Every structure is written in structure tokens, then in C-alpha cells.
Length: 137
Image (cartoon, rainbow, N blue to C red; front, side, top):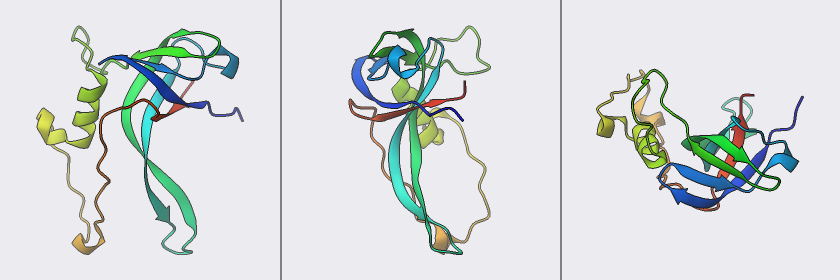
């Protein structure tokens, strides 16, 4: 199994372009996709109490447009199914995911016990130092 490529946002160029601190020497190639993530709370197995890890909150999705030896330039991933439309900025994508009603979207509700709802953490905008992780191929 191939090693997952991880790094951090090293520079924010504009609302749709970031530079990450991993490059071709780490296996990064053009068109590779990365998630920009924040770390959420620790999650435990309800049966064993074993710590399963910390959940990732996706702040943005980017695609490598140019890979250099030690860094890569990434642009906001275009929305699927909206050909011809201007791509969203990273911050707009983050708002849509974290607050769908702000963008006119409505999520379906699950039948959950209200006392079990813990709420998600407050996630701010993408900043230098945010973690990145390669996804897919």
C-alpha cells in the first residue's frame, strides 16, 4: 500500500490558490488532489472505549497545478456538475460545507437522539499551517 502524502499549507496566494510544503520529491504530481483539513475531536469506539482517532474537518479541496521539488502550487477544485461556471473560492467551498443554508442548500436530517448530539467544532478559514492530505490517485 502506498504511503499517504501529507503536508501543510505554506502560503496562501489568493482566494483560489495555495502553496503546500510537499513536492515532487515526496511523490506529488500535477493533477493530484489534496484535502485541507482541521483536526476535530477525539472519537472513541462506543463498545470498547478504544480511541479511534481524531476526525478530520474538510476546509477545502485543491488540485496540484504545478509540482516543484519541495513544494506544489494548488488551485481550488472546481465544483462537479457545474460546467462553464466560475470555480468557487476555497473559502466559499468551506462555507458551503460547514453552513449549507448560507449557500441555499439544505441537508437532510437524520433521526438522532438529541442528547447524543455533541456538535462540531468551530472551524475558521484556511490558514498557513493547516494540514493537507492527498486523496485518490
